[in-house]
Image (cartoon, rainbow, N blue to C red):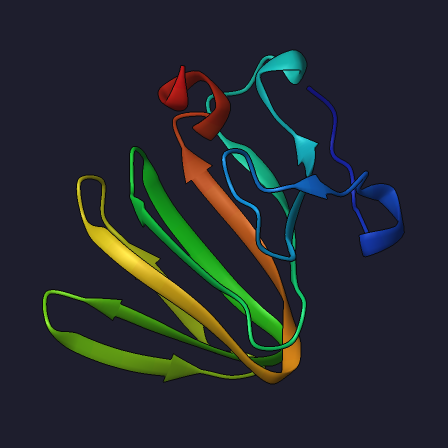
Length: 116
């Protein structure tokens, strides 16, 4: 694999699998590229929510807006430049605020394979 850089315009956003909310994921590196991780961008419309059991090790970097993540009875809120780590096996509810949010994410292993 060669060294590459990406911007949001490189991502092809699709609705987050299994969700009806206005939450979208756009992988730029995944299992098709031969590496062990998935890298991409997430886009959250204003005031959206998703609840999921995390099937992979997941790290989100908030680029724009704010997100609140609830797990184990605790809620944290992250804004631009902040990182949220969600360990495999954690049940979370992720909520965007009134301005929506954009994130960059890295998962190990690939989240699409883990969900199958």
